[in-house]
Image (cartoon, rainbow, N blue to C red; front, side, top):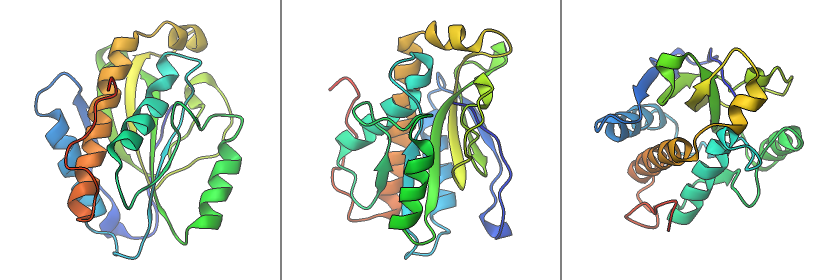
Length: 206
């Protein structure tokens, strides 16, 4: 879990970071439009891979797998998804999954999704940033970076006893944020992939 920024190569792919509260009624639309702006600039032949990092063994760190499960339920076609509640991507298998992605796909554009800790005023915020995700940074773990862009949800306050804080994060907050992120990614992918399967995003609780 956690994040960081800085993109590389093509300047026209760089985006302005977005940070919005999950409680705002405009947030789903803002997130999806931001993602559409990014993904719409990609060449049609470039595969888009979504990797949702985290574990269901920690409430706060379950944001990624919840988003992945939500997306899996939509039956979204044309996307390549890694990381669900059933098959999570976490510290123990992250390196292997990243290697597998680059073996399977040529020059993939990777959207990384994860939970993060932040300042008290930022809890409940959803962020889209340039560059790779830095998983484990919030709990002082050295893990490989992943992603061309990353989407993160600030699930609790960082700075002290991070493992304890993640374990004691409210599930309701995490599930609500995961549903918004999942729906926003689904909406963006549906716009750029006209052959997308279902017209309506499923609910995590379905």
